[in-house]
Image (cartoon, rainbow, N blue to C red; front, side):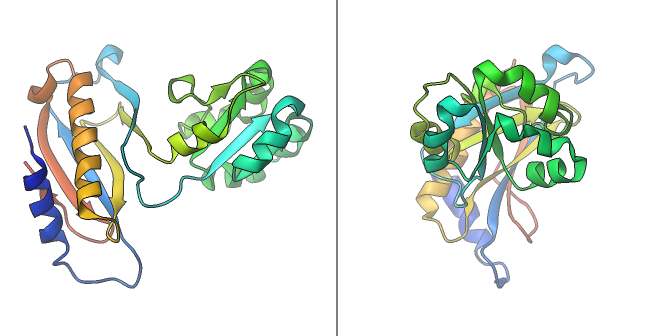
Length: 216
């Protein structure tokens, strides 16, 4: 079990590190134990929503039909109409798109076309529109609430190694908010693990360019 006071003390220690000429992120590292990753049912893959932002905006691209086009243009960082999917048969262009966006939204009734065009590249990066995160939407969906939610969404995956790492804030954020984000991630991750806290061996926090410090 961890508490907010312990997290805040760890953040204070990290703030003693050498200053950089850019705003660093805080990364939470969760090291796990007691999971057999050779068994697919021991893998972890889930989304959780924080109370506060991660300090940097997530870039979101929408893949839509004409029904959502006008609304999507008001909300998302990039919008691609299904008639323009053919442009992304160029693999370099598709890779650039994947690298420059954090989430992809799909209009549900054109998912087969989206999978055929974008699946190979987005799938290998874990960025295919995912219904677990609310990223597959009907043709008349409300889009602004989804965009706002994704700014506070974290994906936790444990598949190839007994650890996971995610951004929980930036050094110019209110420390209480960063600590709250860490507690939210910890508590929800514990609930997903088969043996709860017993599956967590270490919890560490680091800045982008710094060394990790153990929280517990």
